[in-house]
Length: 319
Ligand SMILES: [Zn+2]
Image 1 (cartoon, rainbow, N blue to C red):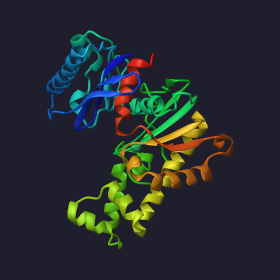
Image 2 (cartoon, protein in one colour; image 1 turned 135 degrees about the vertical axis):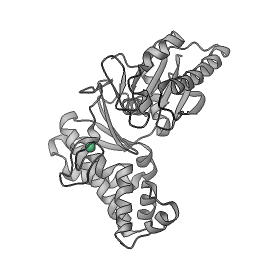
Image 3 (cartoon, rainbow, N blue to C red; image 1 turned 180 degrees about the vertical axis):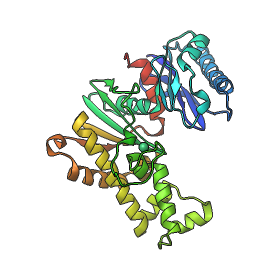
């Protein structure tokens, strides 16, 4: 059985593990991303963590087929990272070349959205699905697609950035400068913004307590309050479900997926509380010829999807 080292770089930390082709993770560890303006201390920390895993693999007689790396943002044709908002020091860095020089084995890198999609596709039991769409709901909204076993790439070496399709032209300002993007009305940060505005408006809601004690309101607080019958929180959840369904209904007429997976920390935490209204809204909105046979499901892989997807880059992706 083949093995590789998988790395999932996030805003505040990176997860690393030795991954088997079957999806078993060995020696899983996490490294805090050094807070610095230059790339070198960050790369040094990740390379050091990778060395330790390589040594573990070596000691156990496990040959490594390569290193797979998932990272935030995008990358250009030369493989240099760009548009990393949460780890800006890595902009312009070619991770592939850095790791290849150090480890002398194949290194494959891709975006965290693509890795999350691949992880769920290969390790969530969807690898026979011909057209698979995956939406990650976390701080932001990411969407990836696997078609005939390969990541679909339209622009930016992935599926563009569908978190910024417009669903509400009169909606709130988005971080991208646009208005009413899916991400501006249905992401983790958007849920926080709407919830805080609600509390500040004086509306009667249990969310006041969270805001008073934490100084902020998380998406998790909103789903928890909604599940306890809080009307205002329930309205926020209903809105999020509607906007997500609308985004998915639009994407469906382009990709005609057989399966749509809903993943990411917020979707995983909300479970059926989000899945059910997304489904209801989706089938009410979607163009009927494109609705046939579509299944909308909760992600099965969980928080290691990005890590497993980074491994899948090494084992399965040739493009
Ligand atoms: Zn936007």
